[in-house]
Image (tube, rainbow, N blue to C red; front, side, top):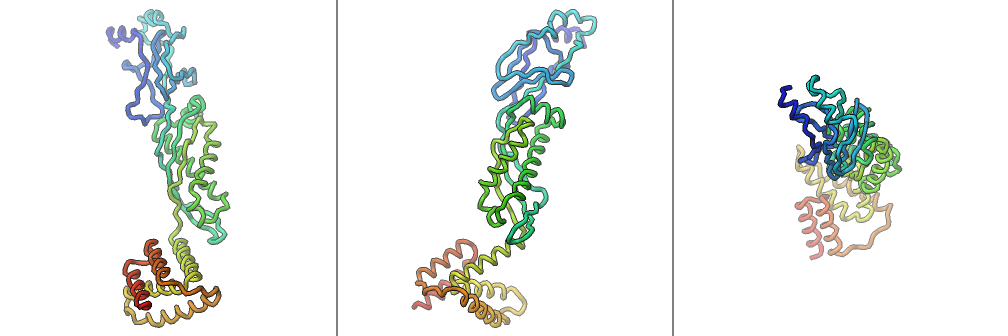
Length: 327
């Protein structure tokens, strides 16, 4: 260190940190000279949504909430530093200063990396996946510095978010496994599941000084075979409610599928005959519905079109058939 640099270091410092990105959770204060010597009388500025943390010898020494402070500790007097000229102004006492953000960090993503097994009364064991977002803040700075920063050695913002994301995924798997909801009901109870997930996470994170201020489940997906089975069950339910519309829907789908296969429509007649036989068997087990008006039939067809069950061509064909039948 040159003489001018050494003398420059004797002037009082202003210790502060301004995060322009608003994305950093923990930031270390670093003097331009490269050392971490703190002098008596130096000014410490702690902004809103910040805490200043002082570590001495790797141990937590002091924490300052938002405000402006003057360091008056007797451990770092300016006069003592000036007397250290023979030792090149290097103080034997070194302290690290960290600024910890206590604001809310939002829009952090979480997702299941592997399928989660869910026991279901209708489908036995089902593999499900899910993803969503979460928000968090540091509510207990000493606990956070001890557990996350110190014990676990997690320093970088990215690593902290990754760690919390893994906590959300693990808690989600437990909540889903313990839930008595059927797989079919999970997709309609996102808000309830999110609340249970947030409650479990906060109970777990309290000792770490972290609070999950919001947890959101955006999607729960099921295996393709389960989705297909659900569609088939929906078709059976539709058949019980309105056999005429169901047979129109099945016939239209059969014509579309047959046109895509080798042999075209050659085997369609036998298939339709079998379908009619099955339809009669199903219809025999349910109460016969009263004949529906043309308007009701058209309205039901429109609902099937809006839900994506019928294509536009299928809808037009069935609509034409109903209108011709009434003419």
